[in-house]
Length: 226
Image (tube, rainbow, N blue to C red; front, side, top):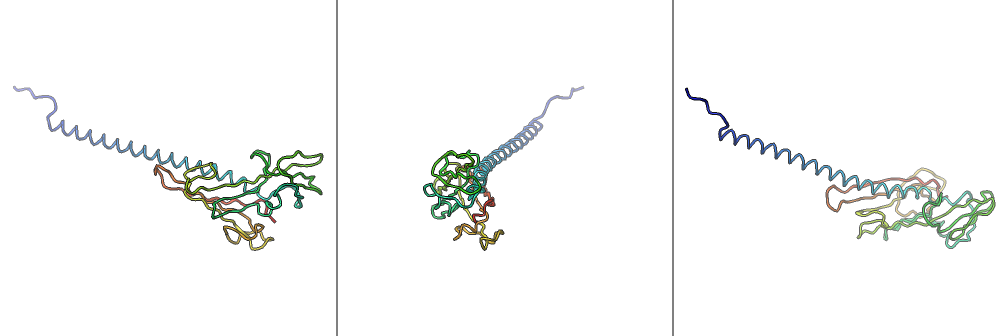
């Protein structure tokens, strides 16, 4: 009686090899897909972090625009303070620069361009540079900040890179007494009509791992510039 042969035949081996190859290819594609997803998500997260850093910084400073102390009437003993106060926020569309004249509460933002000393009752005076308050006075540091968008270099004031677009629009009211925003304009004729600022920032990935992302925020002015 003949004993049955043991082992695998050629066809069985070829089938096993083919099945193993299919599984290997599937796992490879799954790994590549997961890796690409991770890379694109990581690139997107970096873009969002850059946008959050810049826009949160700008929003904080925009909200303090036009707040120069506790009195409306301020005597000017500082170089150029009165002129800067007339237009505390402006956007130059040709040069792509946003200029802010803003209060630096807490003196954490850098060296002040002016300082307003006031007793918050009857007197307030602006001085160039820094100066310590006298008895009964409060000190309000004021800075002039300019954000410049370099279109060729794709960066804003050296703070973030890979910027493909940046724009500013002002929400303005119909009259100085009105509060609601009635329209948006790039350069309102009367700064006292400005009620809010809309910033639009588009970032791109140089490696093209993710599509361009646009971030838009609106900041309401705490001081109506009136």
